[in-house]
Image 1 (tube, rainbow, N blue to C red):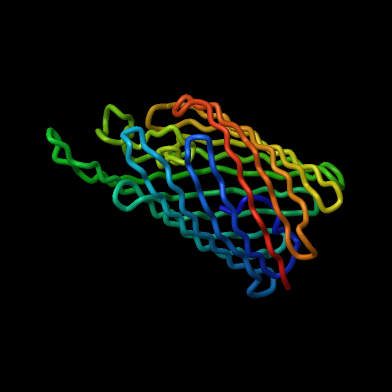
Image 2 (cartoon, helix red, strand yellow):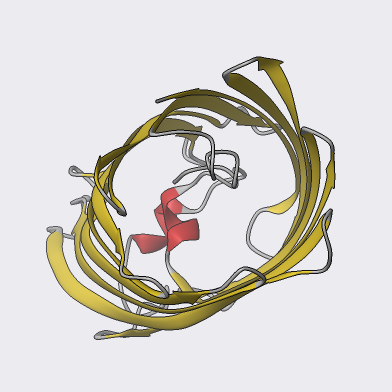
Length: 268
């Protein structure tokens, strides 16, 4: 949930907050933190809330919370986290995430696993009594980061999911109601796969980052491609601000633009 690599090598703790909005009136707010609790061991936590307008005229609120621990054994590290995500009246999940990584001065590789336990409450209608669908998903993926000199780096990541049920709209009535014109909709988390490529350029204490990502939804096989440009600059001796501007081209919700602002505070 953390928005960038802004916290790296900045001190013993980080506190940050951010907001993201898109052109379909979707808004997300995030608060997060990370602290060193022992040599090479960090605890992290994040909470977030977003709101989107559904096509049927209702507003959907989504909550997110995550807590994790990371220990670096040098050169191998392990990160484990547990997260809650969703709206408990509609669709939510409880997730376990594990990342085993290897790091050197120039290269980082990680193998990632994610288990998601979903509950989907299909509302009743005049012709349908409603029901609750429980399902889960296993995600397997990896990531890599390469330093291209003192001021440039490139990162690659990908994740593929295997679901325990068929989530096509024709199979589970009501799941299509989660489709909205916003990139922040609940349904956009139900992906078959996602992949991204990032290029970062450092200019003294400032950083530019270009992210290109793609994903395919498991419900309707709609593909989304995103391009985001981020700029990080100091606010003071122990704080940074990051601006992000991006655009989506989605077969699910059409074209969308979005803007984000994050602030980071560091300390020892």
